[in-house]
Image (cartoon, rainbow, N blue to C red):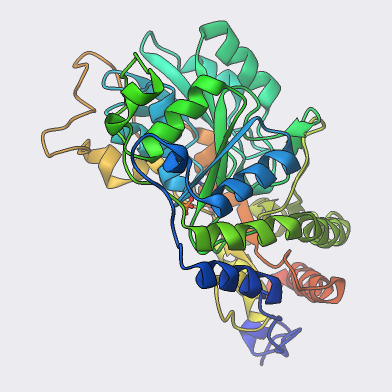
Length: 437
Ligand SMILES: *Cc1c(COP(=O)(O)O)cnc(C)c1O
């Protein structure tokens, strides 16, 4: 006999698809066309002179970013992965250095260290914020530690007071990967440049986008200059800027185009409304799912704010006696088939802890001889399973997340999601129980 749950042949809560994200409007098209009419699609020059920092649209975009968030410098880049590399280069990481990073993030947050011949060392996260735990960070410091990479994951803020204190005590650089949290604040000021340098992604999946792109932010004049030099063939131009310290001044081409900057200016003007909508939807989802015993909705740091890149719960499999995978599959079955990742109603796990990637397990980074992992033969780099128990638990059993806290969805859509979750909780006896230990 068919059960009540859709996964067992019952009637689903909803089959009508969710409205797709509509990210580009008439204003973006007009802005792009203005650049097209000028025909100057990029105005960077990789040599000294007024165009070293790009054309007028790129510079207007950077000025707008500074004005909106209160940073002294905003430096646009062609992706946030290249932006992260410029940050790591600007703070001076090199062979032999260690950078402490969360393993619960996109791979580039950590791998940019390797691009400079340094190595990431992984610290555990706090189970409530999903972000680096300052005490775990401090326990991983060695004489070779040079920087901390703080990631504001899922749109919530890391414990910046705690991480700043660790960085201050040990004289470390503090870089922020704020790809998922544009518009978030900590202690009343915008994240990204809370101490040294950091920034944001503008890829399609982020709150606002330019297709691909990113923005580095800092209040430090020296770091800003070094990031600009790395963005645009630094080796060719250091003398023009009187730069004596050549550390990492071999540059690249990380330049954003005028077309993307034009889109970015319009997108930035939409950020507040996008964040506001996400907060309203998240508030509704918190209200609806807080009473459900197996789920703990995300919390906001009392000093920070949350912009809900995704909405992540912690799931306790022991409450219903149902494994997470079976619970999530049952919720998905109650809702329409996702057309794209924007419609993911109930995802599991997020990324596998980064140290499990083959690159760390086999210690093959640059070239094939083991560099940079073998640079200090006596450094005791540990990438074994077990080093970050909280992350491993979150990944294996606890994290559930939805991408549906997004525009143009409405509270009625969130209610359908909440109804689906509630239905699965109420009828959990239909699901395969946890294997007896
Ligand atoms: C998206 C993302 C990146 C990379 O940004 P790109 O612009 O895609 O290169 C880095 N870190 C985190 C946490 C991200 O979410």
